Length: 367
Image (cartoon, rainbow, N blue to C red; front, side, top):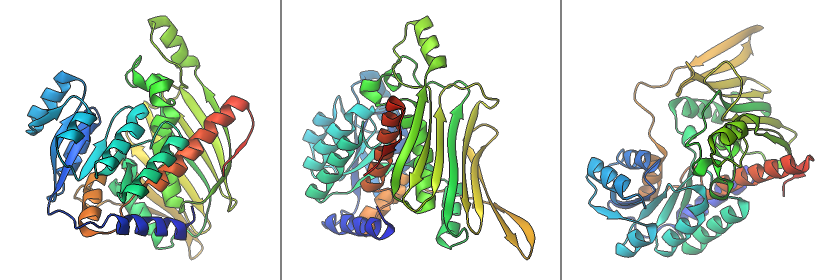
């Protein structure tokens, strides 16, 4: 979607969601794995309160409810939605259930903040975007790596025109060994939709697209591999039918290209390598993790007065607000919200095309 088209979509969502905003948002969280972080994020905004939680795991439901002092606890999203009105629902389930829970939330009159990826595939993602429009509710995808201080700092420089036009990039997330919940839903395609590409690569793809100004994807050439995880699964008797590494070349209609890589298991030096590099006509950038962990650094590389100039962005001392905070603020103020469903849909279309290309061995066009 072009920049003007995205702006129109954002404004349409903001207008369509303008029932008089409540003084305080009543939030329900479904799925209490990553959902714990959603609860913490909602607590950053004084105008939002998590009043209900749902999870089929009774032990986890009780533990999280006690930890955060939430009395309304339900074994399912359906039970939670039937119990009373909510303004927003955080969907933090396995990917297979994103569509089902989001549609039920829209039907109940709630806005939706959905964990990445938007759904199992682009068809389901389109159904979620369409349902949000019909209901006049907002759909935001929790692309959490947009909301770090390093990412926000880089985006401010992009918006100021520092980089000119981006024409090439490489965005990666590799782990030496880091298969989440080995034998669980992450490695089961029917529940997850894929492996590290849909789990980790989705973040690096969204971050690159966001910084690049959302150029329209034209085609992709992708490959997937599973030699390390497949062998481990066979040895341990675990279920694993997704990739353990994926790579792709993405071509955009403006001529720019992006290399995307993601792995849960790779024979590399670092325990965790997370990096996005973009090259522009006026300057380049890198955002990368520090000490193989989850703190990030950002640099700009340019030339001034005949000399190379490297700029280190220093984030502010206070932590950057979460996506939950920004979503709450947008709803309460009537302003457009970040990471709308349309952005999540484009990301999913690219991921689908990468998997299709890896299967066929041929480039796959998008759109």
